[in-house]
Amino acid sequence: MKNYWIAIDWGTSNFRAFLMKEHQCLDTVSAQCGLLHVPDRQFAAALKPLIARWLALHPQLPLLMAGMVGSQQGWQEVPYIALPASSRQLAQCTASLKTPWGSPCQIVAGVSGKNEFGLPDVMRGEEIQLLGLAALHPDPQNSQYVILPGTHSKHAELHNGEILRFSTFMTGEIYSVMLSHSLLGRDVPESPEDPRAFALGVTNALHAPHLSNALFSARTLRLNGELTPAQVASYLSGLLIGAELYAVAGKEAWIVGSPALTERYTRAAKQLGITLTSADGNACFIQGMTQIYQCLHGESS
Amino acid sequence: MKNYWIAIDWGTSNFRAFLMKEHQCLDTVSAQCGLLHVPDRQFAAALKPLIARWLALHPQLPLLMAGMVGSQQGWQEVPYIALPASSRQLAQCTASLKTPWGSPCQIVAGVSGKNEFGLPDVMRGEEIQLLGLAALHPDPQNSQYVILPGTHSKHAELHNGEILRFSTFMTGEIYSVMLSHSLLGRDVPESPEDPRAFALGVTNALHAPHLSNALFSARTLRLNGELTPAQVASYLSGLLIGAELYAVAGKEAWIVGSPALTERYTRAAKQLGITLTSADGNACFIQGMTQIYQCLHGESS
Image (cartoon, rainbow over all chains, first blue to last red; front, side, top):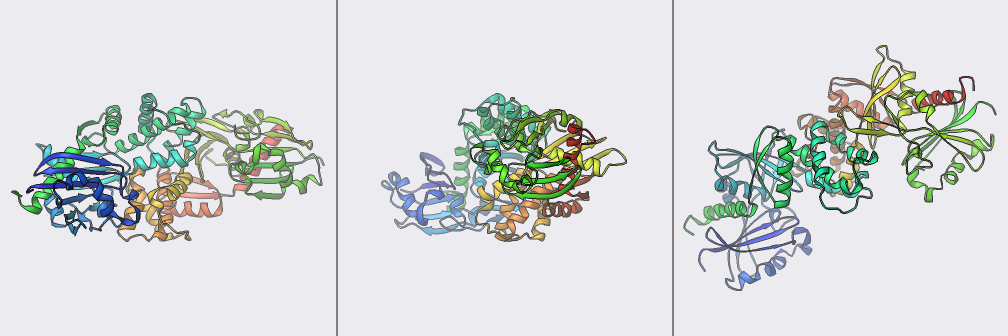
């Protein structure tokens, strides 16, 4: 079964796999089977059933994996490569292993470097989507700003198809931690998104530029009756996404993420006068992995 | 026992009481017996043993209370008064109750208003220290900026002995929540403060002005070996206090708080070129309560 391979994005919370024929995706699997759900580091045992239907046809399909699977807590640690990062450099720094069923497997490195504020920053997995985006949507100016929203949102600058620089914003994690464990989330019921409360959060993030101050308004607006308990989560989301996008002020940017998050970010960006263009995350990942696979195996493999 | 009374600061976590003779403090009690530790809203039952030794001498001493005891979750809710706030206005808006043992008791209102960023803000308890400070340390310019560090730090502007405006920073709560519940605190051991890590946090807060971004450096500096796990808490504290003080840039300010917090804030402020002068929190509270007591009972009581 020449030219067949599997591309895998294995993160902390989620698992996605793509059956590939050269650069074409034939089938996909996704599961909430991130590294946190793998007991006793039994990665091979966790992986096999997830891709069993493909192995049944091609028992030793080569695997190319990216994401936290290459971290210290993952299957095999792959040291970060330094910025600026290209597909070629990532291909040169994979770690190899063999699965018990005989599939050759390579794990792609993460990327580390100093962010625009001079602090060290790291990513694992997002670099694939970034490099894929640069190839799928090349910019005439050879320069792109990309937002990957999530638990730890990444903002990256691409230049000539390479990752030049990036910064992490803990937007998603601060949201869930403050909602679950701080005064702000006390007696907040599960509720659908409230677009008005979200928009108010975005606006207030703009007026109150100190996040540790702005967050308190999720409490005071409720005390004075401007927010109901059911609106607090949406307001908090608007506040945190607004604060994150504040760093993008005046830029045009790409956004690569789930439809729900992309839609929220795009709405917030509009309020702040930022133009976001969305790109499909799976397509970017597949393209990025294909580039690395081709570097590893030659263009014709 | 004319002219004897008890001033009480009853907050969410802590309880402090002062036996007063007119404006002089004769004795103090403090206990980790905040409202959270009072079962089934049995406030009278919780209070009596804390001040029993004073009641033994003077069984119906009048009480004047401030803090969260006047909130919805407290003994009796006292509506907030609006900015600007003076001792006289606070005295006009107390709530009265009688304890089961016959002490007349008044609870002081909190203060609410729009902060400098246009968002609603509230305080309960801190207003007493602020008004006390304005009286104890009057400023020749009639204008003071005061920081009350804590779980929800308050920054207030005083003018002519009144509270003109204030803002809350959730510094202490974000610190404890992120350390206990986010990735940043994972496997962080209990450790004494590390002044070098704290100072690095303050410096980095200055360079990385987006808090949700800066926080991630508590992870990356550990990943790249610049911080040990034992230094993470001190670094995070420096980062959050630095971010809070960033809002004070270029100002001279008073600080009223515990010796440990005051010392930390003063160290951070020095790094940022901010001059902080400390004032004793108990002295400010006693002075503020005395002013209100005198308004309530006439100067000669």
